[in-house]
Length: 140
Image (cartoon, rainbow, N blue to C red; front, side, top):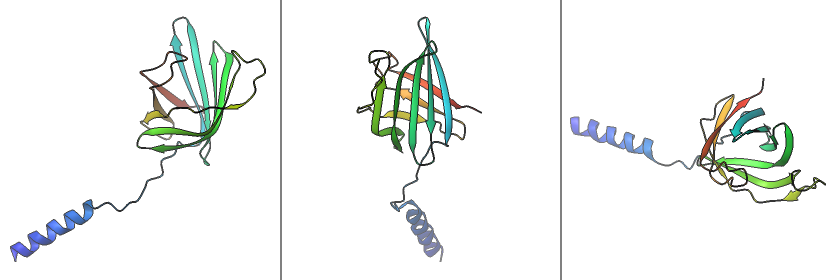
């Protein structure tokens, strides 16, 4: 009898471990998030808005001057924030501010809560942010 109970326990444990192929849809709580970083003598402020439909709009300011904007859709897979249909405009070098398509490498995202998250800037060479964790907090 003990062997049967032990065998049933093992089967139940193994059954709980099987992959059900369910995916958990991870989203950033809709709202506007803000992050400020000091780079040398300048302040970079990033303001991002995320919707329930997984649409984002981001503005980047250096010392309160709008430098660039990007928009598109996003999804999160394996702790990566993946940008889709990314449109970008650069006010620092293109005074017309025309939207253009641009591929953006995914950022690592962690610590997603109802009012904050962190991004690891693995590929932001333009602003010299590579290798930094940046915390975004919801604006109330």
